[in-house]
Length: 235
Image (cartoon, rainbow, N blue to C red):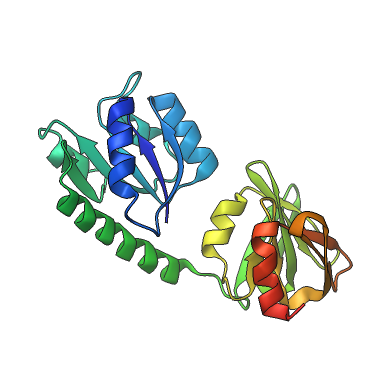
């Protein structure tokens, strides 16, 4: 799970990071010390789980949640117990009092882990799923098996199918979480490919790879992902 920490105290952030370091499946994507930073962090990194202090400069945790279009899983971490009831009105996952008890933290993380796994299973888009795509005046009903490439453009993603490549208002991080990983594979920071369109591959410089798709495009695989591709295709 991708996580983020929203906490104005540097010492409190360090303590929480130390406690969370024991969970190998948690990937820290960023930290924020105030409300504006928190909104930007969540918007850009799209973490699955955020540990939120309630009292923050500029706006409190509840005000931040009001401003988010899509809220990740939330665990509040605070020294004050009087906000517990209010926190659950925002569908927060848990409410941990400082100093954080490691056992309570472990239970909260396990709860988040299970919920995250259930969400992934329930929202997973298979290759036979049909999605509606609109770009300007043009509209398509597209079967995902027809899509050979997704490419990030800021908060948008260009979706390649047949001779079309419209932009959709979804981030690549979001798509990575809902697409079937057995079919759609993120090859680098900006692109996800449909593995069934891979036509060949070759080693590239610095441990990277170049893949050719049956649709004609050539794409570059990051060094981190190259060994996985080699295992899949025996290149």
